[in-house]
Image 1 (cartoon, rainbow, N blue to C red):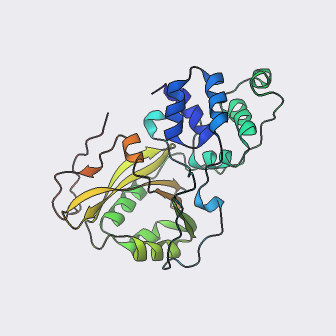
Image 2: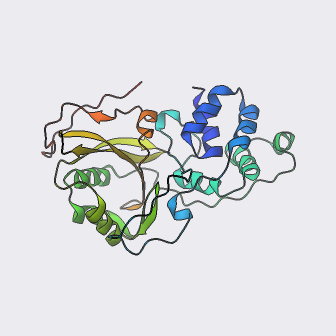
Length: 278
């Protein structure tokens, strides 16, 4: 698979953990990996990079499977250097060669002469990214998890700031504001009652995250549904990205379905053990 430092470096270049693992596993060293990434690097956006927020949360959602979307990185593949989702999104807006110079200069601490030897006369680009809260509020995250598992939309709404963003690739529609987020969830979430959703806590991009499993009414089995990555202030959620690419569950060492849950698993205390893939 390659070492985590090289994988994280390739991920910063590409915005794709899937491609980063592949390139890091087939190259040796940062110079070779950077050159390989430059051959594959494009721009992987989030929906909020492409258009204005939707003003109609109850309306039809636009979707594009043709766009190569930004992906999250699981905690076990991070390298201790900056990898916040906002940072990765900002890097994707920079042309690939300038992106490489910026990563090597600002994150990998390469001297200018070494960067020039590899990339030629390319200057790093300045990055301005609002940092997320350093220490996530565990009580806030517990309330968030309980609100989703109880399918309590009014409670969910209270956990977002008034100008919070909710986006969910591959859907190009995205939404701003706690009220519209609540209207979106009420209209489009397939959950109907408490227990339909089960959330497994994770970390992705150094941020709190949840793997969401949705109960299938045909057999009462909870199946992989989405991975949510959250950006917090000290008291509320300002940004949520729900990734619907189910292949990410394997990257995060998570099962595709949860076995052994009763038809309605939420009783306020039930927390079955989830086996992780290795």
